[in-house]
Image (cartoon, rainbow, N blue to C red; front, side, top):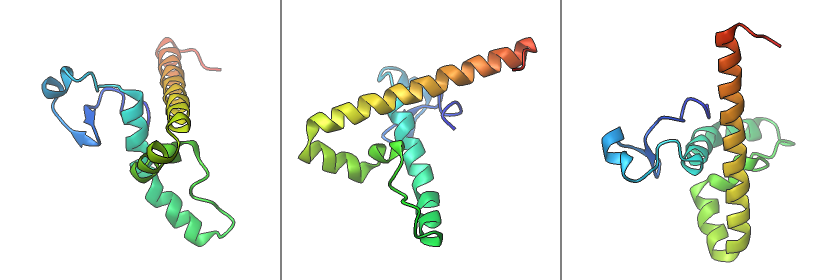
Length: 112
């Protein structure tokens, strides 16, 4: 999912055309990608949490990209928010690099 969103124009979760979004530098923005993933995944995690009481739907890294959590953390602990945001952006960047590497290897015919 991270790789699919790399060229998608995202601005606070809204789709814009590439031309509209070009000046904002939001295309491929790791934080915007993390927010989109959190938005798409949270309902599935909540559903799984209702089925399995031992499962905690909020125990995942992308939890910090949810709007409610962002708002709460910015207000209560801005330093922790900056730390979690930086960590999450780094993780999305690593996922993107790994996806690029895997696709390049597939194109070359190299399989592990």
